[in-house]
Image (cartoon, rainbow, N blue to C red; front, side, top):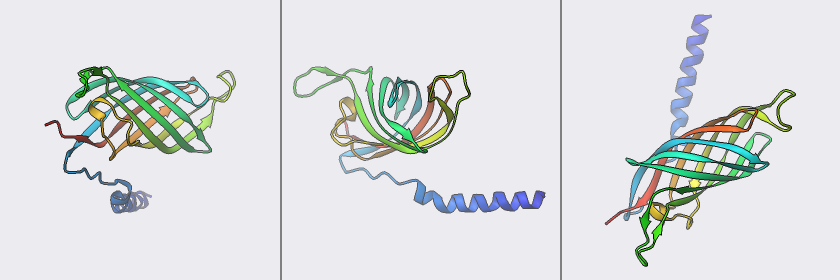
Length: 180
């Protein structure tokens, strides 16, 4: 029995190692951009069908940021499709006017969920489970430090409970414009 488990784990490790280049796409930045790590946590709630609202605590390179997040979309038959808009509490200066702007980014998010219906006594339609997602910046939606952001990929793992609380952790790389 132990040998079968070792063989199974060994095969799993080999397959995972072989698929890693396929699963993790390399983000390639233009000459005027710098590859920047991004990571953090998201805490949000389902506020009505197809809409989530919450907070993001993240590091963009070494800069800590606190942001709000609005999600619009759906999770149907195991597939997740959302548009997430993030607005942060930083203060960037718009170079043309000198006005203050807050960094903003809109992401196209897709993934899959492994969920089950909640038992009686919880809100109708509620589910619980875990999910994985990949988010990519939507070109032309960035403001502040995210102005001009196009390439990037953020990997998300999360869970949802029967009261529509959704917790996520994420990490990835984005291409920010050089600050010169």
